[in-house]
Image 1 (tube, rainbow, N blue to C red):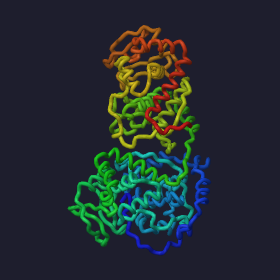
Image 2: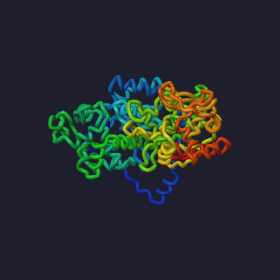
Image 3: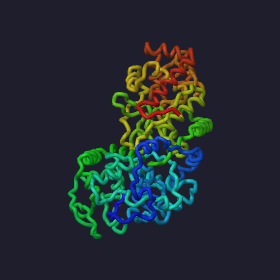
Image 4: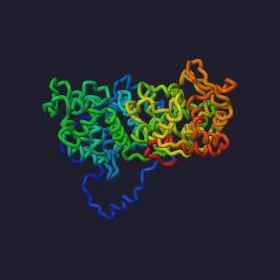
Length: 572
């Protein structure tokens, strides 16, 4: 199974590979304990480690892993490999955790819980040989992420930075992974030792939705769910809805069977129903798959990052990559539109929407909303940069790219903070209709922008982003540029609004838009609304006369826009 059905263990002598410190308990005086904790710096990656992490061709590796998973259906065992690599972590002694020590003979590779994992290690070896710069531990972790995503599970944020163990001597003692024959207290002992909580225990147990137990590996047998290659919430639904009876595997190991004896549960699975706190979460996840996917993503990323140093993204490098892209492809307008439409769904009352890169799920959700037509172009342009910098959220890259694109086009310098969190499933998209409607007036604009915590000056300033780009009939149903130089960010949009003569016309798509006297420029009804509204028109006049005032207001409003509803932001 994905989580790993683990054989019961007998308490034998400590392994010869067990470090002496873990064999007997040594009382450390409280004063020394405090000193030791205080002197331990937070794990930070060295400059070399950062450079190494970001010189790996992550996008190519991900594509090869996707092909492997689709060809072999090995995702359950790939998840189990990463799980068992990371799940040995002890937060007190800072030992164990993801470091690919199983690839050395003896030690953890020989632990009963890891029986059969040589299959997964062997499957990944050709990819490791093809990409020697990736560490085994990072490759094993990423393979599990890809396996979960390909099988329908959450698209989780992967962060590199794991180092590989040099030899089997770095193995920890046997017995740190969950024992499938134990109940709630044992699960808490194991998971709390890693730094996880009850939510993490139940969410991670749900990985049993993938795979099956094999009697030659764990002594248990059978799948947990009807579709062991699909990652969904059926494990929780089945726990609650099927009748489970304690019986045996053909090996004599105790396990539960459903009425048809086609599906199984372990004693540690049924434990989730016996504990009232666990059971509440089982019921939540059975009823709400999106909530399960989010909690699983949070817990699983925490699990596979246990004890690994924080790799700070090289933002100067990302900036240089975006600048190069903008200059080569002249794509500033669509990069701004992408970040704008990602963030502009924020609702401060319900605290929903906002910059979460929900559009990256192309089958359903926000990517299918009419307002986002054509933004697949921008997502495609930024994908190589997204691939190159794992550990940076997609929504951070989209927002940062728009800030850089604005500056490259001559616009204001906008303060940028990192820390947006991406959605993990399309179901976390918000309903259609939250973005401004180009056919509506000032009242509609106020509804949309006030909902995000903006005021009239913000509305007018942000409308000034129309100084960049053109409308495309095949995307929005409107056509033409707002300004004479659609790649230059300046205050011409406001000057044009006031100085040109605008006439309402029907365009070639059958939609109404305004045309200037030359027939070369256009405005939307939502643009003309700014000069028809008595409170907004003076702001238009101010920005037309004073570009610096526009830039200042725009920088502050745009920062507010792309930070909507993000509680985890930090300066670069």
